[in-house]
Image (cartoon, rainbow, N blue to C red; front, side):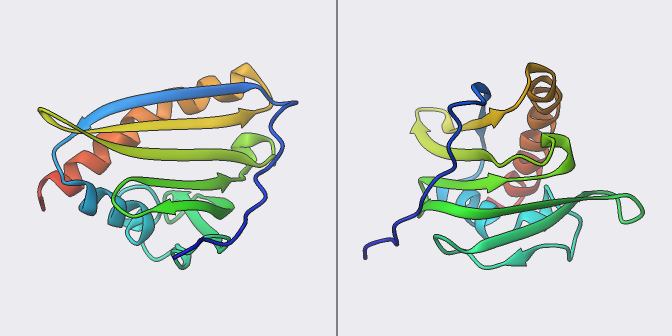
Length: 149
């Protein structure tokens, strides 16, 4: 089935990006489900996710705590079941600009390597802030999905 054409944001004026990799315990199908249907199990405040998995669909969720929420807005750019998820990410922590998060699940001999790229940051300082947080979030994802898989 063909996916709708999606216009990605122009990141050329915002070249700062980061990559994080982690070998995960869960199979690709479970990781894909956690990114498309279960963000509130590991990344978002439970019950805060609005949207449905589909290319060009809007996405909203909060991070933080129930008392101090950080709203995140975006739209889904690409979905490849059990292989890849890509969406835009806009929040106060990105100075309100549209960044892009791409997560790929690659099979390897000792599990699944999750390769995350977050691009389009307006400054190196904002990138560095996200560089500190993403490894913790992927560890949480591994804990949640590894206990199920």
